[in-house]
Length: 469
Image 1: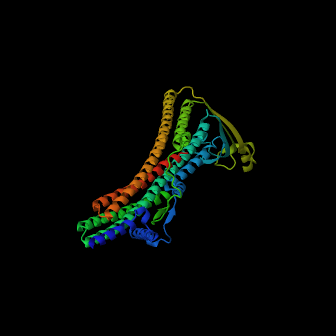
Image 2 (image 1 turned 180 degrees about the vertical axis):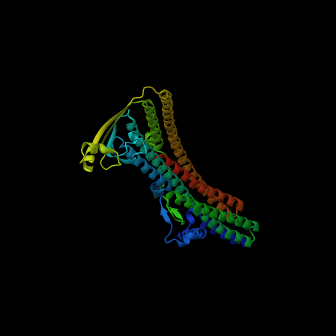
Image 3 (image 1 turned 90 degrees about the horizontal axis):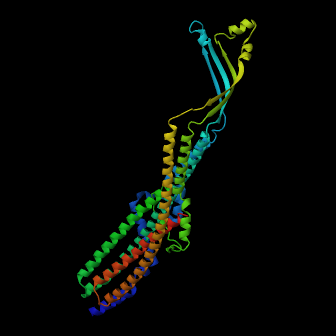
C-alpha cells in the first residue's frame, strides 16, 4: 500500500514538475515580481514616497541617456564651451586696439623745478594701435585657440563614449541579474514541490528523513541565492542611475531586447571597425597634441622675428595746469581765453615702433627642445594608432569568442535539461537517489546561469566593437 502511494506521488511529480524554464505560470511570475518589488521597498525606504513605478528602459535608451546627461559629460561640455570662447577671443587679435587715455598733474610754482614738471600737465587722447608684422605670433595664437577647441571636443566625445559604455555594461549586468533572480526564484518553487514529494515518502516510510533535511538545506541555500541576487540588483541599479544622471532612489528595470543579438561578428565588421580607427577620440587628441608641439616649435624658431607696431592718437595735451590760460599763451595775446588754449592743445600724432632682435643665444637650444618634443608627440600618435588597431582586433576576437561561448553554454543547458528530465523520472520510479537528483538539478541551474552570463559577455563585446564606428 505504501509502495502504491509512493509510486502515485512520484508519477505526479514526474509529470507536473517540469524543468523550471517551462513550468512557471503567469500567476507565479506575478508573485515573484511582487515579492521583488516588496524587497526593494524595504531596502530603499525613500521609494515609499515615489509617485510612480520604477522606470523601465532598454539597453539602447540607457546608452543614449548616459551620452546625453551623464554628470561628468556636463562638466566636459562646459569646458568645451570655455575653450570655444577662448578661441573666439584670441581669433580677434589681428584687429586694431582702441583706447582712451587721460590724466592730469598739477605742480605749483616753488615745489619742483618748472623745467621738470612744466607746472603740471594733462592729456585726453583717443588712440588706436595695431601690429603689422610679428613673425606669425598672432596667427599661432589663433591656431592654438582652434586646437584647444578641438582637444576639448575630443575629450567630450571620449567622456560621452565612456559614459555610454559604462551604462551599457551596467544595464547588461542589471538585465542578467534580473534574469538570475527570476531563475533562482523558480528554483525555490521547484524545491518546494520536491520537498512535498519527499515528505510524502518519509510519511509512507519509503524515504529517509535525512532526504527531507537535504532538500530543506538545498532550499535554504536557494533562498539565500535569491536574496543575494536581489541585493546586487539594487546596487547595480543605483550605480546605473548615477551614470545616467537620474536623481532617484527608486529601482530601475531593464527590458529584454525584442530579438536577442548574440551572434558573432559578420564578414564586414572587421573592415568597418579598422576603417573607423582614425576617427576615434584618442587619435584625435593625439593629433591635436602633435599639432600643438608643431606650433611650439614654430614659436621657438620665430622668437627673434622682427616686430613692427603702429599707433595713432588724437585729442588734447598741454602743460601748466596752475593757470586756466598759460603765461606763455597770455604773453603772445593778452586777450587769450580758455578756448584759445584748448585749440592750441588740440592735435594728433602717429608713431611706429620697430623691434629687430640681432642675436639671442636661447633660440637654438629652445628650438632643439621643441623639435624633440614634436618627435615625441609623433611617436605617441603612432603608438596610439597601433594600440587602437590591436585593441580593435582584440575586441573583435573577444566578441567572436563570447558569441561562441554563449552558443556552447546554451547547448550545455539543453543537455543538462535532458539529463534532469531523465534523473527526475528515475527518481520518481525509485531507481535513483535524492543526491543524484539534486546533483542533476544543480548542474541544470548552473548551466542556465552560465547562459545568462555568456549572453552578457557577448552583448558587451558586441557593443564595444559597434561603439567604435
